[in-house]
Amino acid sequence: MNTHSRRQFLRQLGVSAATLPFLSGLPSLTGAPLPQKRQRVIIMFSPNGTLPTEFWPDTAGDGGLVFKSILQPLEPFKKQTLMLNGICNKIHGDGDSHMRGMSCLLTASELLPGNIRGGGGNPAGWAGHISIDQEIKNALQAKPETRTRFGSLEFGVAVPDRADPWTRMSYAGANQPIAPIDDPYQMFGKLYGKMKDRDSLVSVLDDVRDDLKRVSSKLSARDKALLEQHVTLVRNLEQELKSADADAKNQHPMPELDPSVELVNDNTPQISRMQIDLLVNAFANDMTRIATLQYMRSVGQAQMRWLGIEEGHHSLSHEPDGNKDAQAKLLKINTWFCGELAYLAKRLSETPEPTGEGNMLDNTLIVWTNELGKGNTHTLDNIPCVVIGGGPGFKMGRSLKLGKTPHNRLWLSVAHAMGHHIDTFGKADLCEGGALALG
Image (cartoon, rainbow, N blue to C red):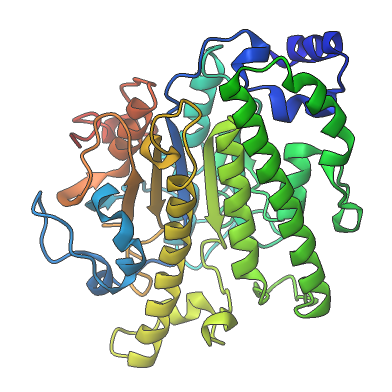
């Protein structure tokens, strides 16, 4: 049922359109068949490379994973983790390594000509191809049975207020960057309405409570339970946002920042968790099946004071391997990112599937990746790639050494897992061999 017919249906029930986010996925009201398995994908980005010796397992194959220091937060999800060693961004052309590492990460094709000059290489412009998240979104939105309210959602955490190839990884098409939403208050307003700014946050449930009670009598027992779960999730999100707003005003005010320097305030960990909770809630209510979660940006100079680190992340990543102090701080930073990934996996794993079969992590592929393999070499080879969750054709609980494999083939595998069986993606000559054999 499309949005127009849903709204007409709600009018016939005598309830307001404000109830649409709560009811649009319930088969009892839409006349749709009982919900089938919903395959989902999340692509999570963190910047500035990793520490290979603390990231990649010493052995590969089906013998089981032994996590190094950075991956320790994922220990509870070891059997649902697949590490892909050897994924390389082989896109050449204009732009420096950070620019191509970021804006070619999901597009897998060259940057367009432009006048944006980085630290090395020729100047460049935006990406010249659609990104894989939007490619899959378009395929799902073309089918009534997989169409969702938003198609895709782009979440950000501490993304600076600027627009350039270092800050954008999602593209609707050539020269069409998509900005992530890094304000959880704004994202909540997009999902549920009733918010123009933080000070106007009021309960969306106040206006729809009576309507939901009226509709509830028409629901099946399963849908009634799903609706109650949705209402509880939204109530908890509202309280979380209100509490966070009070804390931000009273304890950690947003600083005035020099727009030329990226600084991250002390509320970043809290904002990250709110964004993850909103993402999981949107998935649980089938508002979307495609999401990106972008932390900071390429060349990000985040100052992670909550980890006791005052130096900028990018500057630390350029220090030589012999700088033990810098290495220890980079270990903390990358482990923190992994901890946020683990929280995302946990939230999905504790959220039941609407079908009643298993949990949402069982049918969600999370791909955690980076624009560089290693910060102080600017290499685009062996970029960090961790896949968590479940999907058709993916055998988890292991680490694979693939050799130098173009990341185009990884995105083909993800597209196929989502039922979108394309033969090439991005630069066609880098797709030789097709989707990766991950079964």
